[in-house]
Length: 593
Image (cartoon, rainbow, N blue to C red; front, side, top):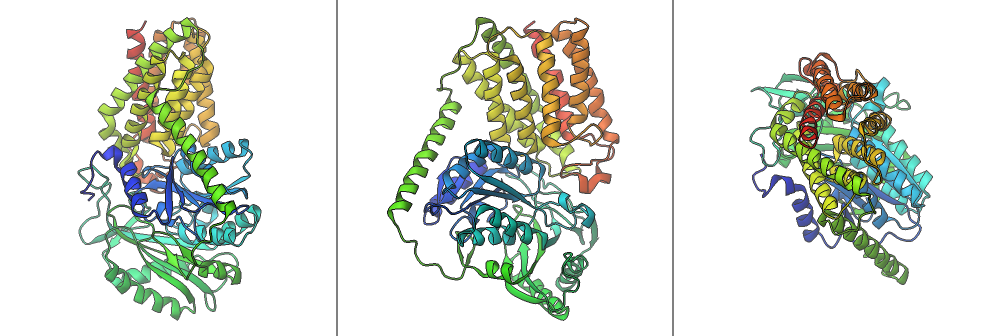
């Protein structure tokens, strides 16, 4: 378990602060993560990676020459927000465009996609690529749904080495696509991990058993088998991966592969070497030439006792990129001379430092409530008081039920829904309070709350709740006294925006199963002329019933999808939290009626 921490909510930030203090030779901090200590050479594509904390050396430890130009770092097991990714990418950009790279998880896909849109709006040519290497999380016919685990490293490295060679953005992207298509991973575990401040692991494995086909966020495996010997574990890993070869690798014999035996957190290096000796022998027997193998902790999951094996099937070009030198805090290969300072680099560094400092100043000012707010009408400022009360009710109900939400989420997911919702809702309430104190209208109070919820929660829930609050804020605005019909219009737009952004529909076992019927019921009730509190009460009752109904559904999206059968009989955590929130907001509306 994680024993050394202060406030669990501050763990990720404090870990990143300590990491940058220890590795100033390689990295410097910017809002949202880290970038290389030296500026990106003018015209070079900047490869910006990222994901949640809890996986060191991924992602911050992979920043340096020959690998990433920057890393956006989210909270524990939660993707960084779009604003954080945008900040890191802006600081890393050297004029050659940006390639955003991340593991294929819903929250990362949402936030990195939004960041790409913001960068494009800034005039920065941007592409995005999700690594999807875990063969246990989806079949070959649904490979686009696979999650990214330790295969992140060879794919990141291939793209970054291509960028170092001066290739343009589209060619760097094609290298990433080629490496991703030829990378496969599979893992096993003997115990789950325990998050900072938690008193129990996210999942347990029975005595003398192992979990098979696990992820890196504390998700349970897709099955269990008897505890193997080291050689039996190696055989399972190798045989499983050799059963699924890339389309253009018909036979492993005579082929070359980059091989990674990855420790997930508490398997000792000596144990890894015992397993690797058999992995190497088995691959050799199959006729596979191993190229520059890596054995160690490369993508971890806090203190999880487990290992994974990754094979990247190489061609001449991918082998050149895999062998290319790299120098980062946690990953080094070959030899790189000291960077040669020049005026262009110094100027670029100064410009990036200035941009990062400005970005930090804006974020800090927003957090402390010192930024100016748009002019608002008296009616909208009064409505903002009701919005603040509603957000206070949201934060209180989430805090009261955070443990329950985590337990529900852990049945088939990673168990962090309660933690993320608590971070997001409390941050949103603080931002709303600061904006209201400055005289903001209802729309501005909601949009500032939206940004801080997304930033602090990260993950899928952060992206979706940021979207919900922003949609409401846009509908309410800062000029008018929002009536029941305007509020219902905002909720309807929030429902549509969440479906557009996340791609989920009713029946997928997500928060959409509650949001859609809630929005429809609210719109129908306000159309009948009911006052807002009464209309909201009717809609909240609909939401509660819809949330309970998700217990009978099988998840078709998100981290729970590989463990669909386990979730039967348990409601979706996101749907349940939304239902709790709609009822809590009704209480706030009654108080401000």
